[in-house]
Image (cartoon, rainbow, N blue to C red; front, side, top):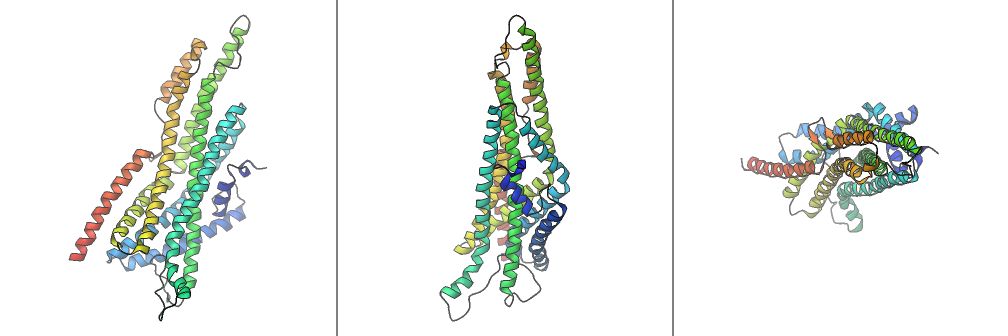
Length: 398
């Protein structure tokens, strides 16, 4: 069985394969699935951009289109980022497999399995939440046609698309064709977002698991019944020194893994945070603007909840890396370092000194992905929301 077909990785592989972002796909299958993804984001993006260009003078239309346009462009950038860095992405997955093969004991396997299982649970929960929020937003416009069947009126209720768009044809006449076309786009965009986001968190969980393995090795550096008397002293001395060097090498390997992951997902995260901020802010504005229309408010509340969850989980993942990296010095203190030779103690001091600076996932070394950054983005979003509402009221009064 392929390593990535195991329980902890199977769902992520299926999602990435479905949208053409799995680096180990055959060329034909990659072309087929990636074509579907590109088609999906194109039929979402182009009509919105055309509509936006035709209605730039109408602030309400601009605000109404901002959330879906931002979300669609985020999905486009996820495709570009992971396709452009497919070589690095493949190396990350290969190193993940290699890390599993290099585990030394059943305890280490249990540690890494626990973190991988956390990643699997997150994938399931995140998928359900995102799909639920998007379908809540996208399916509410169908309330009119459904009510026409259940409780018909003398006239037909107004038919609305999930979001404003310019299709260059009669929307009333071809309503259901255009609606189906739009839902295909939603399926593609949701699949791309879920596949990319859950893989990012799964790799973060792997990093945390490897930090857990390193902490376990440091805490048990002098264990395993190593003798310290008579002829066995030299053997114990060499063995502990070898273990210490392995710990330093593992720490460096994790650091390089984080750097490669950061460069692979840099474009992905830049647009995720930047355009996600616009999506969140514009959705908050629309909640205030649509106050009194319960169905409309419900749609935009679902968008606010969706983006808040996405940004929180991305920030939480970055915070997890920082927290686990600082645990190395604690693990070194908790071990029986006083039983180690002087040379090993010096190496241990070096490792502790290097671990004092927490590992961080950043965007171009400017924005640190952690819970503090999440709090800052949320506060700024609310501030801009009040500014936009004031701007809209000013434009209406003129």
